[in-house]
Image 1 (cartoon, one colour):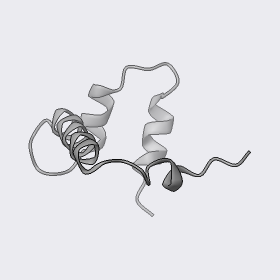
Image 2 (spheres, rainbow, N blue to C red; image 1 turned 30 degrees about the horizontal axis):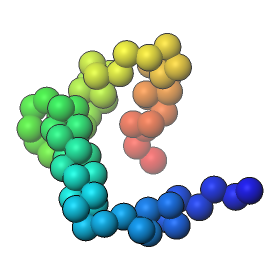
Image 3 (cartoon, one colour; image 1 turned 180 degrees about the horizontal axis):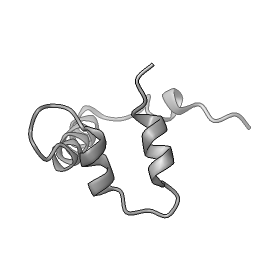
Length: 65
């Protein structure tokens, strides 16, 4: 079985799609604590309370290439 995320969402109604967008926007606004439209490393660290995500992983995610 191959997971195909695009197909998984192809039957979402416009109402459900709007609800998912609202939820995603609300979650983003919670992370974007200074309201600049970006989630920086400091904001992400503050909101991440998981033993699975340590500082090294966060550094890698925010590494500029």
